[in-house]
Length: 233
Image (tube, rainbow, N blue to C red; front, side, top):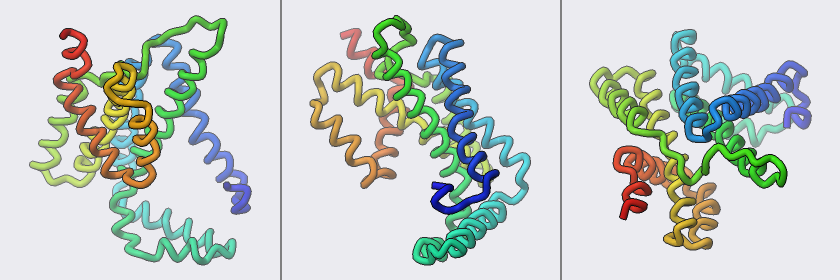
């Protein structure tokens, strides 16, 4: 993509590193912990820690993202992509206010989905015999659920925008546990294959509604353990 835009070499390298460094670190962490769930819990904590560092370094996140958006729009215009640049003409400040949490959530999602898919492929290798747990059993646990609840209450009481951003991302990341429940339901025969496929197909069209629905499901499951209760019965 950066080659098509004829971007500078440093931008190309930064783009590549932003994808492959997290992928390598998570793969190493998975091998060290020998647990997919524990690795994803660490990834959850690292995402929140990264946001805290960002807010500690950047005093005005909105101004920071406005400058980034303006720079990206100028780059598109310079390449003759005026229609694409025009898409960024609408309410730059409004977009900039959401960029921190959207970037954090997107980066985390890209990394953990890549890890889960890579782990799935790794399990198909005939001679490895390496098993670090199943994705369908993923549970972030009550400690993380409690931390999310406390952050949400504190954000509501304090009205501090950075804390509100962090609390939103903490909750939204539970969408992955909601997806794990969908895979577990499919494995138990509660959700037909068509339903699981439809779930994936609907994500691009109802991304916000569907992801929030998965997040709610995953968050409630972290407290009450639907799968554990069903197995006990």
